[in-house]
Length: 255
Image 1 (cartoon, helix red, strand yellow):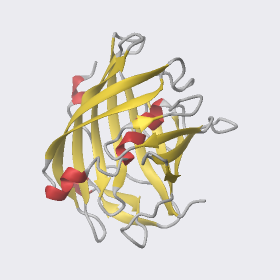
Image 2: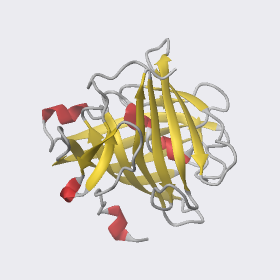
Image 3: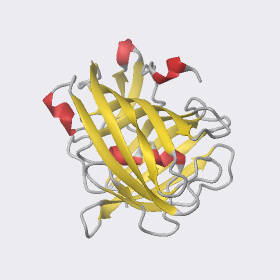
C-alpha cells in the first residue's frame, strides 16, 4: 500500500467548465471552477452532477471515469431528504440504474426502496450532503469534530456491480479537521481532512478504512471535491481503492 496516499491529499484541482460555473482558486493558489448559484440559500429541490474517477483521477473520459447525477427531490415523511442518484460510466451506452435513498442531517443514509442500493461512487458523496455534516465549520475554518452515521443499503465494493447483495447496516465513525480556507472568487471554500471507517453489522463484518481530503463550499453548503482512499479488512483482491469526485454542475429547482 502506498502510505503517502493515506496521509497526503492534493487538493489543487480543476473543476472543468459547465454552464453557469465561476472561477475559484484552490488550495495553494491553483485555479478551479465551482458552481455558484445566484443565492447562497439552497432551494428544497437540487440537481447535482459530479465527475468521478474510480481507481483513477476524475476526468472527462477514460477507463474508470464518468459522472454521477444526484437529484434531491423532496422531503420524506420522517424528515430525510429524498435523493435519487445514477452513475454514467465513460463509454457505456446507458446510465446505471437510478437508486433512491433518504439522507438525514448527520449523514445517515437509508435506502428504503428495492434494490436498496447505492454505488461505491455514490456512497463517497451522498452522506456528505447531510445539512449538518459540516456545521462545525461555522465555528471556524480550523474546527475539529466527530461525525457518526449509518448507511443501510446493499453493498459490494465492485464498480461494475454497484452495491449488490443482502441489505445490511454500515456504521461509520469519522474524525474531521478543518485545514483553513482556499480563496475563491468572492468567497472561500473550506479545506477538510477526514479519517475514519465503516463497519458492516452482520454478514462478513467487513471494515472499510477511509481517509479523504474534502473541499466544502459554504456558499453552496455542500462538498465540491472529494478525494478518498479506502482499504478493506479482510483484504480484498485489490489492496486499495480510490474515489475522486468534482462538482461540475449545480442547478436549482430541478424537476
